[in-house]
Image 1 (cartoon, one colour):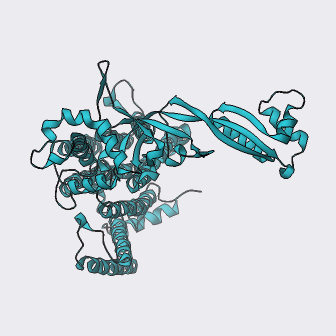
Image 2: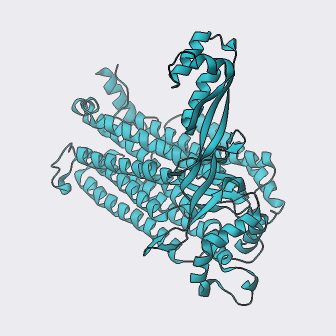
Image 3: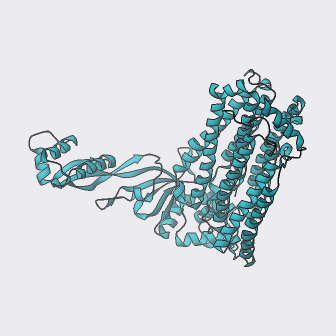
Length: 433
Length: 161
């Protein structure tokens, strides 16, 4: 079957069908992204003071990625211009003589770089970055003093206003003027709705979060105890004994049976994962199990995606994580001539909320991941289409009908420019405002 | 793009233009970053500056990269985008109407006139969208600027083949 008007314009529309089709598609895309942009604007202007974390984005990375996408947009239109001149391929060695294939691969490379930056750097680095809120404002004030006293002293001349700031500590002034204003407000202001009043409120009520990375923590070592067995689960006695053997008790005669009938310690001092897996297997086969904390072991790690529920998960009345070592943002600590982020120890008993910069963190991150994720999905789809057009199966169209193939590349280009266009607006909105 | 724009010279001219626009876009991005880093702006000013630069960049992309500059005679695209705008604005207006209020700019209550205007927009824009659609559909034939008989003749000829 021959598809009509792939090359010649349709008389009534004045366009070849593919072009009208892609513009209609772009029109629907305008509505899709437009709705999200509108949501963003409504959420942004409706957000309470000090809740919109606009200052967390790395503007250099964002600008770099913008350039990469601009370059790809330029390359794709150059690829089309080469096809228009009938030049499918040229020598790789001289970019001045590149043909369609070379420019198209350059476009693909840019698109891949864009996604790599986003998916292997920008997003993952947010998943290991945490905010922690405290149950009690007194704890917050102590931790700020502990973590930022040194920085406050170092910046004294810039922060201190003899008249107004007498009653405030230097650490508090440092957090307000160097961190809080930067993150939630673009400029320091003492007016209503300005940064100073919002900060004072957050400070007094303890709703201010401290930001940083988790360098390590103390995690529970768990005792797994069997407290009884009933054949509820439809597991026979010998099968139940086998389960116990599979969990590593000694194979001596009668050990499994005694444990099953009288109960007792199955595993001592095991890690959380081992204990939970054993608990799952045992309860599934009719055992009742009690977990208890034997002690806490320090762990060196930079965990992803931690939330409050994880650190204070109840294990026999004690939390899973006892304390975390928290490296504070924008703090400096000198040790052996090297400068580190100042590390403070936070007891999980004091923590009201702990959340990495994932979508759940806040409205800002919710809409941030929604919009950038949808945009990235468009880039990903674009890469697939470009690869198809570069493969022999796609190029077969070129060898059959050059104009049709050129038009196909033009319509793809229109889509790609639209994706670039969306990013042109996303960049100032997400990285600057 | 119409046939007169397919000549090799014109393509060469286009390629130069593409490089130029690429340069403009990069410069726009750099300016945005520089302004943000060097100047101490309030949020409102930063929004106006940032979005204005983005608008200029977007205009270049649409006009040159998407060669809308040479396609605008092809009225279908223009119609499609205008309709989309009206439809979208109407939808948004309706949402605001349904909400009955607007967010508070700078923590101050919005004057009553705002929701009223939003409601009016919510009514007017979909209505105008409908009228435009009806008008357009009731046009009997070509919206293309070319004389009508010519494409008809072509069509007949190709059918004979």
